[in-house]
Length: 604
Image (cartoon, rainbow, N blue to C red; front, side, top):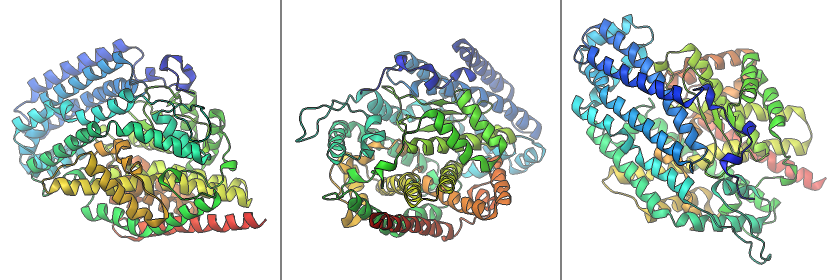
C-alpha cells in the first residue's frame, strides 16, 4: 500500500517536538532573543577581543547564543524531515536558515579577531577559561587557514547558499520524485506501489526474486530521470569544497575536509584501501552463499540485501522492540536502560511511514534537550538493530552533553559512529546468548553480516571509495556529471564484487541515493567507527565491567579528545592497521561460520 499522508499518522508513532518548544511562538521568541544577543555582542565585543577577560566573556555569550540557535534550527528542520510536502514547515525552516546565516555573518568577527590575536593572549584565555578551552584551542589550530575578516563575514552570510546543493538533493528526492506502481514480468497485471522508503526498506529485502528485481528496475528507471539535476547539485557541492580548500590554503580538498575530523590522510586512505582489498574476498564468498541458498540463476546487485534465512526473520512490533533493546543493552548499566525507557515513553522516536518523509534513520541531539530519532518502521529485526544504533547516538550525546560544555560536544565524524554501531554489536551478542540452536545462531550472525557490517563496511565504504575518486578529479581541476558518476560507481562496485555479482547500469546509479556525499568525507567514517566498536565490544565480552566503565568514559568525553585519544581511552590503538585488520578477520570468521552452519542445517 502507498504511504499515508503525514496528517493521517497516529500521534503515538510520531516524535514530540514540544520537548524543544511547547509552542511555535516560544521558538519565535528565541529567534528575537538570538537577534538581540548577537547585536549586543557585536556592540560590546567587536574590535575589543584583546584581553583574556573579554575573550571569555564574549565566548560565554557566544555559547548561550549557539545553544538557542541549535534549538531553533532543530525544531524547524526536524519538522521538515518527516514531511517534505509541508510548504508551511519548509518556509519556516528557510526563515530559520536565513536567521542562522545572518547571525553567522554578524558574529564572524569573533573567530576572525581571535585568530588575529597573539598566541600569548589566547593561551592566557585558555588558562583562565572553564567552558571555552577547547574552542580556543581550535582557534589556535585554525589560525593558518583563516581568511581576512571581511572574507569570513561574506562566507558566513552565504552559508545558506553554500548549503543549497544538499537542500536541492533532498527536495528532488523527497518531494519531486513521484513513483508509479510497477508490475512483475510474466506474473499478470497486479500492480505494486513504489516509493523511496518502500524500495529501500521493503523490496530490497523481499525474498520473491522476480518482484525484488522488478522493483529495483522500476526504482532505477525513476531515479535515472533525475540523474542530471542530482549530478549538477553534487558537482556544485564538491566544486565549492575545492574552492574553499584553496582559499584556506590547504594543499588538497582531502586535507581540508579531514582537518575538522582531526585525522590524517593515512588513516582515511587505510580505511578504504584495506577494506577494498581484504574484505572483498569475504563478501564475495557471502554473495556466493546467498546465490546457493536462494537457488538464483545469477547474483545481481539487486540480490545483495536478501537474508540467509528469510523464513527466520520474525516480525517485531514496536513494543517488542523495546523489550529486545532494553535487555540487549542492559550491559551498559541501569541509567542507560532508563534512557531507553524514556525514549519510548516520551516519544523521542518517529516510527511512522508516511509520504514525503526522509528515508533511512538519524538521531538529532540538541544540547540541553532529549534526542530525536527518525525511522521508517517495517516490523523487521533490522529495524530493531537500526533503533539500537540510533539510541547509541542518543546515549552518547546524553552522556557528553551532561558532562561537557557545548563547545566540547562536536565529536569528530571519524569516531561518532562508534557508540551507535557498538549498540548493534551488543544487541547481536545478547541475542546469540538467548538461544543456542544452530538455526538461530546462523540467523543472528547473518543479521550482523547483512545489516551491521554490510551497511557500514560495504554500502557506506563503497560510497566512500567512489567519493574518493570524485575528489581526486576535483583536486586536479576537473568536474563530474551524471555519466562520470555512474562510471565511477560502476567501476567501484565491479572492483569490490569481481565476477561474483553482476553490476548493471542500474546498479551504477547507486551514487544518486547517498545524502552522505553532501557531508564531506563522512561515508568512510561508518567503517572507522565500527572498527573501534568491534574492538571495544570484544573487550566488553572478554573483560566485563572494567571495559564497560572505560566505554562510559569514552561516551562522556565528547570532543575533549581527538579520535586517537577517544579510541585510546577504550584501549584501542587506531594509529596502526591492527584494529581494522582484526575487524575484517572477524567478519570473515562470521561468514565462514554462517557457511558451516548452513551446511549442517542442509544435512540435518
